[in-house]
Image 1 (cartoon, rainbow over the protein chains, first blue to last red):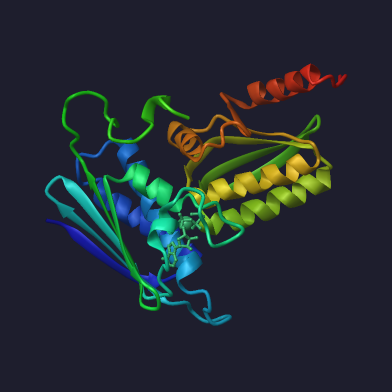
Image 2 (cartoon, each protein chain N blue to C red):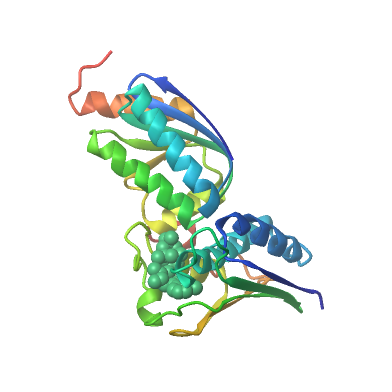
Length: 159
Length: 123
Ligand SMILES: Nc1ncnc2c1ncn2[C@@H]1O[C@H](COP(=O)(O)OP(=O)(O)OP(=O)(O)O)[C@@H](O)[C@H]1O
Ligand SMILES: [Mg+2]
């Protein structure tokens, strides 16, 4: 089973690198193009969160902390983990609420997109020691109809 | 990401191509705000046909532009977003304030029409 591991500083300019790399691994599984787009968004959100929130007191001019991204093909599913050693999340339940953000300039949509686009999202975090976001997505949906029936509120049932 | 803008009536028409994420959103904000002021525009129309990627940071940047336009009584429209981009707007629940149209012509026409319906007498 194929896998990859990236270790890189929590810099905004690395977001594209991470999603392109993980997206390329995902393309080895029978995902649809729409699935791959969803994976790219979810990975972008998890890595962006590490950049935005994990290391608030990064030294001016210096490199912020490190983020470790792992992606693994497990049978027909892709497993992605994004790990930082930053400040952690105080209240995970609250952080997962749509529109909740600790930053005034953000919208609190990152976890909403991760949860909508991946089949499983698990967050392990502790204040002071960092955050691990583990996401899983299955490539072959059961062949009983719509390709993206698994996503809440697909085909505009609810807006 | 590439950005080009020009004025069309009261709207700033911004053509964007590439990916709109945490990194590129910074330049997007700066460019759009500068051109919006420079052209003295009121509305904003974003041609998104060639935007291949948007995430919450990109969406945040678009909503931030909406706030600026709204201050001037302007509207914001997205023309030609690809289906996966449109879906993000739906999930985020912002379709009510960021209207999407099939293409730029339709977006500009719709904005003109709305204005007329709102009682504006513009030619
Ligand atoms: N890696 C992390 N380290 C510390 N805090 C985090 C991390 N990831 C998320 N959080 C916290 O969880 C909150 C919600 O995250 P989420 O991605 O949903 O929204 P956001 O990042 O604030 O806004 P958006 O994603 O729309 O830009 C964040 O505001 C932040 O407080
Ligand atoms: Mg986020």
